[in-house]
Length: 270
Image (tube, rainbow, N blue to C red; front, side, top):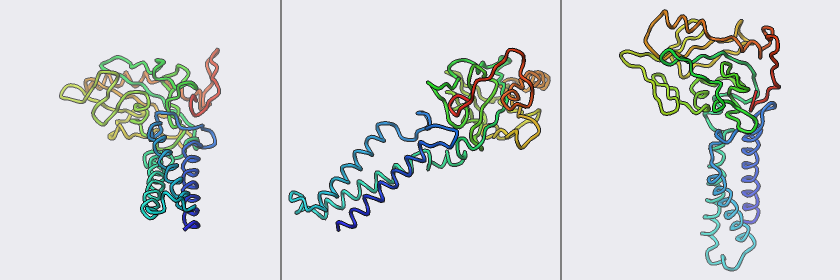
């Protein structure tokens, strides 16, 4: 019995350590996931830790033949094992390192590329350079994707396979195939307005799930126009011509304008 309990404790701790390392490593170029990307709240994580410790303590007491538990040893061991296995299993499945959504993105820090973005709503540009959209060291948005340093026209990707909707999500907005939500306003396709994504001049069907291309595998950085308004070809074409190409500064495929200095990049702010 003692050997079985000891083995369970060691295995449980190993799984916890493995999940914790995966959750906090984020790849060679990245730190820990930002708070909004943890799939467990602090309260949930604390509760699981308490449950695990209680279960482990009960197992230890049973192994040491603690007298008050002698009469209920079988029940106590079963309950303790349930607490340990349940808390470890829940933690294992809920952490970013093992969460299916984050797994689908790929490892943070495994790539580093950029895309240009312009969002037009009823003929007006959405200012993505506002502080509330910026990822900073003190207030990071995502270890996978973000904008930073007051330059809202350039999306920074630190993981492959990150869909466009996720960028809007971490920026405090929402994007689906038919609706864009910004602050308290929702813009949906209807009989007079369309929500469309144009990439390098071409219309994209599944706009929310579009994944920007790594410029290292293409000839040019992606230029994205997210358009909400009348389906007016001339107006859309004019808006496409306004999509900046500042991502080439960061990809070092074009010269920096005089007086422009780019800061060092990291997974939280670069």
